[in-house]
Length: 116
Image 1 (tube, rainbow, N blue to C red):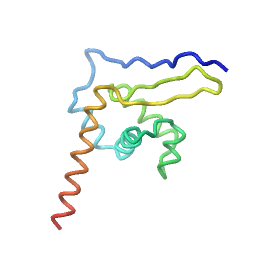
Image 2: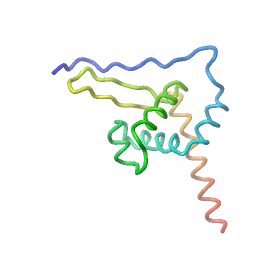
Image 3: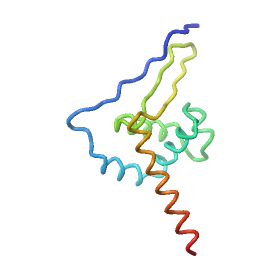
Image 4: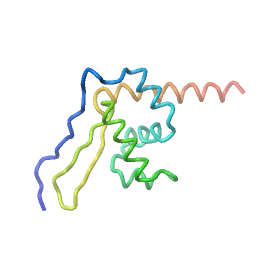
């Protein structure tokens, strides 16, 4: 069993990086994207644990959402050089700030519920 240092997948940043507005639109428009962010924020950061924690979330959809989040620079993938392989996802510095949107959405929902 190898026990060397984990390897983080570099975040892809380029001049064609989508705007924050585009990332927000894409994220809020996808129920699974919000759920994946909530899971990672709650400390559930391994793919198998994510699918087990969320009824209806398939491995295929999870991988697509994680790929989007990596490409947006919200999440980074950490691959541990072990056998069997272990992969975890964590929020980037940008991601830590980006998930504040979840608080705003949750607060707005709570406000709406209390107004009824």
